[in-house]
Image (cartoon, rainbow over all chains, first blue to last red; front, side):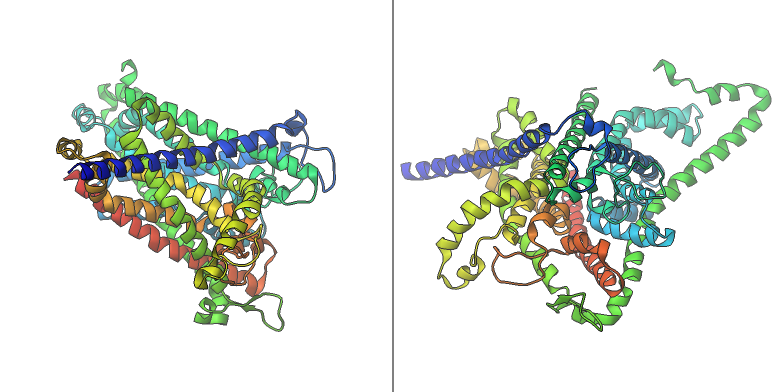
Length: 281
Length: 332
């Protein structure tokens, strides 16, 4: 009898130890990655990174100003197109077509798009936008990002609207409020924090996306705000600089990587704080 | 709640423009309904557009190579008069790296989820959970860079030689773990992939573990079960479908991941039984060759993309069906 107890307790302790070790294993990677980024990235973090253009090969000066601005611009346009699209589609799923067959299909397809390989989305935009428009452009890159943003926002909008109590809808209907006004003035307001959280998470997701920009927005070395031309952006610049033989380029790549990661992590943390606030309300 | 007053409604209360206000409401209602409906339909159009544009782009390659594309090992875009292109190398690399990554990430990811739901002191639960989720937020190109500069050198100099020595002369394992250690290898790429998908598996497993009714667990504890017995006999059987769904979702990610593997996989289309040899995956091949490709070469790369999309579609669709089944069960 005693030996059975001992075996059971020993198995339990072993598994507990393994689970603990797994958690340490996971946390160690996060720590290591952040440490490497800070160690290598901070060394090159000067004011010039924000004020000078990306340098030509072999140059010993230069910054990432054009890439930073390009990234912010393309992310903003991508979210600007993808978020409203996702918001309205999510609204339809939650408010109008909750039990329709159509919504079932849209929900299913949306869940697939949510985790579709981003490089395939790049190929899609290449075929659908870059080839017909006759060349790589920042606009094509933004559209690729929008295709990634939309499914995330569809999902969170629907989830958040479903949390809005039906009594609110019934009360506003009883007061004679038209349905569209009820959705915009009552349901959106009740679900606001959750929807904003979703949009922030979607922004964080595309801010560092590289694969879909490789052959849509491409990248360049110049200051350019023309959306119909190629535009420098941080992820593709990092991709081009990281494997180069030039010390200074590699340094810039690390600094750019640090900037992207900090931005993405900051967006994630803000989104989580908002979400925590929503849950305590 | 003081700002609930709606300007439009207040105006409509004036009796003389009641009919006009109602008409405006109806128009607004209709417009909003159709705008949202069209946006919902756009989601379907995006999927249709992806499939259609990939098929159009891949058509020349489909006609030129047919089904043989899937079993040809050679990838020679520069051969004249017409290039020889086969997908077997990238398909092999995709499957091998994803398999190794899952082998590492599944037990570790589920272990973390068990720790978070059953063992972790409540004070630590949130911070550890958030830290693991932050790991999921790091852009994949950062994983790629970090793998290239930090992980690959370490593995190549310290871990690979040990494994090669360990399995030398053993029949099958000797080939799998054979050859010289290599910086650019399937093994290193798979490791980076494993670290990347780890948080996905943890997040989903944790979410499905919390769907287990506390009463079930409490009764098991009440009968004198140890923590592991509760997990093994109550939590995992109850959530099995959901956990498998989560694993498939992570597999979908692993199959399609691009930037984390492109730097360290070596972009070699050779198939050499060893996991320490350089290789390529479908997404890495597209990422590194597409910009310079043209004609049939480009079309073949798009065909590779179509293959990847079909592969991940099947995996993700089954994942979603499984997760939906668990949701129904939890709802009942």
